[in-house]
Length: 219
Image (tube, rainbow, N blue to C red; front, side):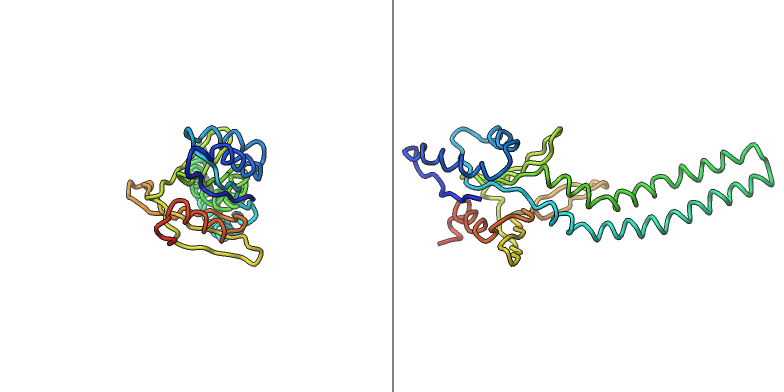
């Protein structure tokens, strides 16, 4: 990873362009055009990195445990209902047996699906991390996710705030840089942290973000 210095005048355009090229080369070639396509005229990339897929997966392992426990608890109940309905129908009307069985199975599918989704969530998050790139420009923080369907989030200086830094022994870590509001399935507003997960040299990245987007907080 190469960390640059924000461009302050048009006279530094050539050096800034070189600095941008060096920075962008720290991510895979497939991401270079993606980052460039999101830049506005004159915008310079100062830092770019990708989340550590393994770290992202580890952080979602508790959800996998919940999914296994959920499925293990729900599946026997559904099977009991299936066989119970079948037993009742055998004593009443043999032609209704399949209807009762299918009713119980269809009723249980959503519950099983929830358990499976939680169980495989770490693997999905790992795959998503492999198709995510973070970038800091002289104007904003950009988070790009996806391949076939691209999701791009930008955070302007007014939105950026360093809430927490988690640093590991090798210098990598997680950086909470903002908060965002979204609506849940019930239409209620919820707030979530925007975290740059598993980035290298997290302390230097924090310093660069502060100097670039929050200069008043530095001096």
